[in-house]
Image (cartoon, rainbow, N blue to C red; front, top):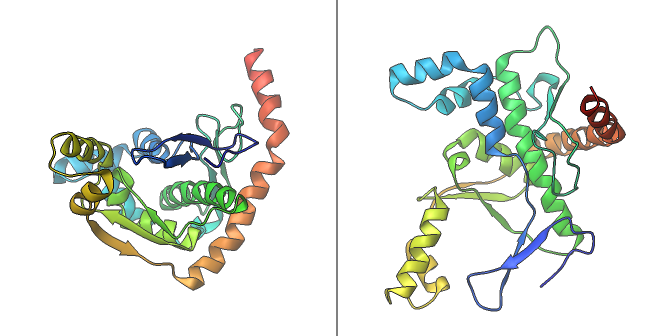
Length: 239
């Protein structure tokens, strides 16, 4: 396996023999949006209950009204510290660039963009290790958000796909069970039969260039805050 000497990603056994899984773990991804929903979107939650839809659907629609770059708002999704591509337990979430003109739509979009920036940070880590990445597959709740998938594709400058079965943890268990039961002969055969791509998102090159510049700001901001994370941790811990 290709180990990281700096331990910025982990190496795990793969279900396929003689293969390895490289894991760059973002401490906060979809849960960042859930946090924002629970703390700041009570109206959307109530409306969603009335309409019988997901509050995330309403939040996505709201975020569509904010342009690329969220009207100058950058969010750092370090709500539980960070683990990859850097280890910093003291890192914390930040909304930067707020003004009297800032709308909630901008904050929602900033959260979506931040998770994509964090993913790019990790993908760039793999690329520095000469690991080629050709496609990103999004699973779980985030796969249901078309705006999030479009943002991911544009930020990463990669094709993004979503599977027909979004909860892939359960699907993976079913794949393994099908092999044990003799329905499929191996993981590759089972995946070919049981995993179907539902949607494909390709990067918009105009957006790619805009996000390339915005990503630099995202990184520069947390680099400027690097020592402050530890100082604030020590200060608040001593109160």
